[in-house]
Image 1 (tube, rainbow, N blue to C red):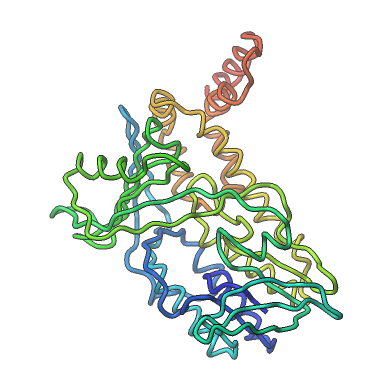
Image 2: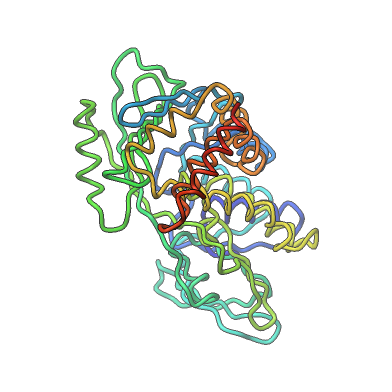
Length: 390
């Protein structure tokens, strides 16, 4: 049984149904009519899905321009990023799951689950009939998003979230449709602003904010500075990855797996979770089919997300001057690596990046080392990086 019609939940349903497993998926909303949101995903999307989701792709990005207050850098992509319409990919995965034999029940709100002989009893409310129904299962997948009730009951804990806010805008004529832009402005957000073109004349402009900040005012100011008028507003809360708790467990005789946002399977550097959430769903499906252990299958993904967590701990400390220095360090070798390896392949890129630009070591160490560390230690790290750069 699967709770939640997210992309991760629907992908798990599709994989299991393809292997002949009886699948029931419950979601409070109609998964075929989910709200739209423009996303950008790496080329790893095709690899994890096992097919190219052409129905959901609205554009391809061949270059990313980065801006700090006084510096800029360009990353040419070896494989283009994919601009994805969230509603379209959810609908595509739902249709594939149904065709494979999965049973999808929209309009069913998950309420609770309780131990029972041979598994757990899941309680849901039929929203249309206002009727409570119960189902028994020995396997439960929680794919019910950033505020996952399955996770809250199973872990007795809630995951941290961050808000994202973006506006769909008309772009000025002459805009290159294959180039995305990112602006770092730590005065208003520890993350960044972005412009993702959907076409030559339409794109998504947004920011990742902090809880309690003035996200709406900051976005309006950012749009006004660039003379862009919003056509529509899209917003969401995204869960953020943490090392604990583990996204799996056992209650009574029921195996419980958390996937996607419910598991916090999100890259905290960019708050992108489409590809990583699908990897989590694939790992859960393999475990249920007896083709592997979920914890072991998640190992590479957890290491990947852990590296993003480490990088976020550095980025959160950056000032505007630090971002100027960071972009200054992005020379030809580093931008080549950033374009060759995707954001979902940080483990492959990480050491290569430090070898290509050793000064990044001292740059990060200066930010991560606690106050009070002797100056000679910091000078040693700086000299070591400088020697490696020669």
